[in-house]
Length: 344
Image 1 (spheres, one colour):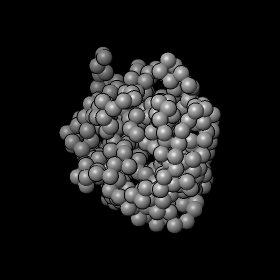
Image 2 (cartoon, rainbow, N blue to C red):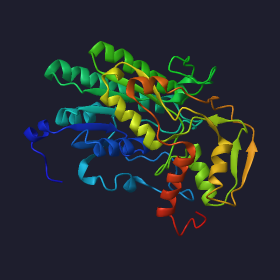
Image 3 (cartoon, rainbow, N blue to C red):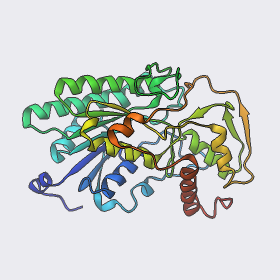
Image 4 (cartoon, rainbow, N blue to C red):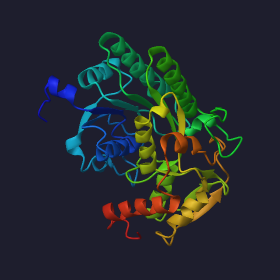
């Protein structure tokens, strides 16, 4: 890559995405580029895997995540928990937008340690915000928007539906707890340093290039291998959200002044049962096998989230219901695994 002179860098529009090679981060990058919101997207990623690459069926989709946008991205290897990494990138590029998505992506890990969660959602968040505050005081630089990726797991068990952003936050596991701590850091340090920030709470994201064993990916993978799918709870429901809708919400939050200082649910806005997901898959895998087992009490009991606030302030409306999202997901599977997964 030909180095960009410092003077030219200052004239270019950059976005920085931590966890940029991740599932959601790569789709946010694509949308920013497609909408010409920036000239270049910096993808900060530590290239880590959170599931075993030796397990049968593992596919590393990271090359596909950036296919076609290579000329519009700058990949930087590193972790935002290290202050020096962040300082170098922010000082060099002065990004217009910072999307903080780097964190352990697996809410279902029961043995996730507090230390791992702290490093992923708390230390990295405080590092970014403190660095922005320091540079704002020293050089006058500040991003137009800092977007923190939280999770609907911060709500814990839903006590009402649809759950809007005022729903009590009462996480019941480490992942949700650390995401909530990251939210509080974002609010507090943004007030202290005068940073324009927004918090996004996604839910049950699914779609092409997922490889970190979310429930939707597990179902698809089991169906492709003709293995029995275990559905934990006949009535268990999630607000499944297609990854392109999630990316749409993140980008909208970076555009609207009304988003500053606010928290938004970015979801489809209607829960569907796990059984619904499997029965839709049955249209593509006619011999699909499944069994219903007791729900996993480790997981919070969730359901529909309200997206009324995002619709009102960001003009956010999702484009994909579960049927159309799975259809596009299956088109990806057919394209990239035609011989291996002939059922599709």
